[in-house]
Length: 456
Image (cartoon, rainbow, N blue to C red):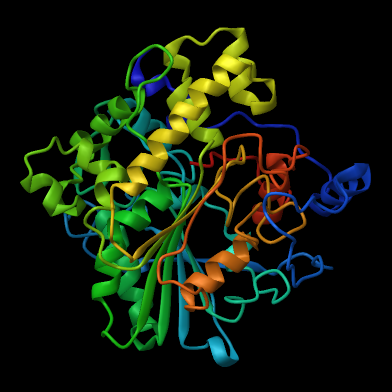
């Protein structure tokens, strides 16, 4: 199967069945017997919240109108794949958080061929014409102090993803039909959005946090030091990539399918400018330098890597992708880790070891922290089956995700580097077997009128 036919990383998802109410779904699962989570292995919960009693307030989309001033053909202009202006959602801070900023970079996979990038032009992952104009802020972007105690009052920004290369590309190409253009301007989008936010108050920050989910988590790593460089040394600046630690490993057929995807992205979209210079100077293939295990060796800004060692998206698309021709047993396993047999779990444990080894390669760099649980999940701080800081949130080292992130950012932990790695599946009882359906966060995020979306 051709690389650009890998459905999950590259093509729009199928429309799923929708649940009638996100809140009702959570309630039903709790009533069904979820109950208090066991404390063995990971300590007792120190949860400081009660569930939200009403839906979050929708946040309006802002388009960068200035992006069209010179026309999309001008290489300096920031535009989406189809030439439309990029956008972001901003909810202004208040009180003590009025001079603090959290910037979240949206995920959504990659396009690595002219064909796959052309297909994105009629979706919100390639054009602002199809973006939801109002979305709900959840997780680290929530304005509910009970659910997001450390960042709820900050200025919070959700930057829309419409370039297909983790906000890194810088080129253009003829489209699939030969009668139009594809604009690979991810790096320009990053710069233009940040420039506009600086004018809106980001330049006067006292503290700032850059974060992102999945492909946005990779973008967070790629742009972390550039983000830090925009502020004076007195400003507290850190980075939080969520589910962005993608691995360069063999799949079950012995091929490196993820490397093939990344190779297409790197060469088609010209991402070289944002790749770590140390990696390139070591004469390594630019594709290798696009993987987080290489990127983190050069990042100097304090970074907190949040990931599952059994990342559900990577199990489905890196370990056992469609291109590897998985049999029925593997199709069941990659859809639900509880369906995996002992030999398949052994393969997944090898994947876990590769992730741990990649992280430990940073050695004595105390500015690199991580929280690696053993849950079958993806994007745990924003868009995940286990919503941020709820009764089903996983715990490590006697802390929930919200506690671990807050303690790390504000220096409340005993040591500068926070490094928690969960034991092998299925040892962590807080990785709940009754995981919430993906539609739960889809409805909470976009509202019921938005169909399920790609979460990479």
